[in-house]
Structure formats: structure tokens, C-alpha cells
Length: 280
Image (cartoon, rainbow, N blue to C red; front, side, top):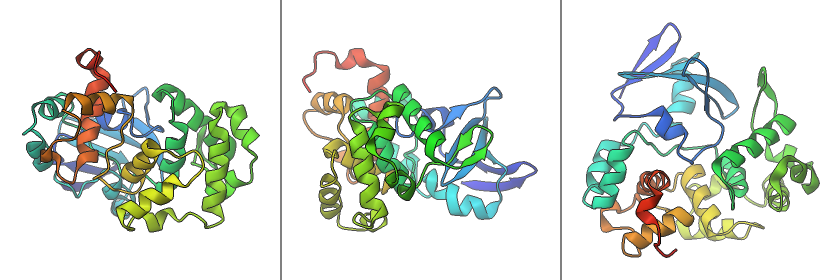
């Protein structure tokens, strides 16, 4: 990877076929969208930015080297060698096909609190609807960063609201879960930062104690919010994929089942006919 300061931001090149479209719109995050100029616009850690992609890399607009190091290097997982991982994954034919279909995917390192709440919202939900609910919550309770753009609200802010406030925004039965989660985090009962480095079993067990958090949501929070790339969330798509793989992830993914999962999840959603009739 190479970085270069330009007149409009930081340009990053030599980054293993990174595709913004494949990475930001593959179901792992819910606040990015393209604008009329083809830039991707989103909010990360309370910062609103636009990102442009051209033939040799991406440019994160309006940032300096300090912001790149503090936010974007980790967010895009730039320290990991995805070419090497995809080479290892390709020992399995299905994962090889998935990687070849969307070679530009990277697993994002999202802010833990935001990932926690957005994946609670994701339960029994589709991506379009999740994005809408998340946007409404941000608009209602976040801080305005630019015209019509809002930060993700803090746990303290959401803890001030009754569950009915979230139900009115379309959260349905998840409203109670959001309310409970916000109170646990704001009151210090649940320390997401601690769970980033806690033993994996302990971290997962603690998340499962949160009202409304089941195995799939816990694993999504571990993977996308806490950087535990060995966890493989199993929604309906991944259950079909794993069944097609013989009932378990293959040895070639070793400690990176979560990253392999992202390629497979995107592949299965785009080629559902390959998994029709496979038992969950």
C-alpha cells in the first residue's frame, strides 16, 4: 500500500484490488451510499467523508495524514494482506469462486458501538430496510455533521429514550433490544472496548447475555465491531453455504473464517440458484 497527499485528500494505491462498491455495499455496513458524482459518502467515528475510486486506487477526500492514520487505516483493514488470504482460501473451489466474483471486498473495522446496534437492527431484516432504520435513528438522535448528514448517536443519548421512540422509527420488536443495549453500555455494565481483547469465548458469552442478542448478532458484532476475524456469522445465507461446504468451514480459512464468510455471503446473495434446496 502507498499513500500520497493530494490537493483534495489522501490517495491510496497498491491495495489489493480494493473495490468500494463491493466493500461498502456487501451487507457488512449500512451508512454508505454513492452520490451523483460516483463518490461514496458515509460517516465513520463521527466524521463525514466522501471517497472516490479510479483505476489505480481510492482517494479519501478532505483528510490529512493524521486522520488517515487515526481512522481510515484501521477502518479499511489496510494492514492485512488480502492477496495472501485469498490465495489460501482458493484451496477450496467454492471460496475460490467467491473470491474471484468479488475480489475487491475487505472486511471493515467498524466502531464497536455502532456495529452493536446496527446488527441488533439487522435481525430478520433486509439490507435496504436496515439502512432506512439506521438513517432514521441517526437523524432523530445524532448530531448534524453536514446538511442532512448525522452522526451515529451515542449510547448515552439512546439510553435517554424509551423503547417506544425506536418503535416509531420502524424498529418493531427490536426497539426493546436497542433500549436495553443502550442502557447496558451507557451505565458501564457492558464494555465493548474490553471485549475487543478479551478471550473470544468470554467476549461471545458476554454479548449473548444482552437482551435480544443471539448467536448470529453476537458473531456479527465480534467480527465487524470488535475485529475478531475468526468468527463466522451464520445467517440464512451462510447456513446454506456451510451446508454446501459439507457442514463446516474448510481448513484453508484457518483463523480467518469471518473474512472468508464475507466473500461467500456476497457470492450466495448474488447466485441464490446455486444454493436452492440446500437445507439450512
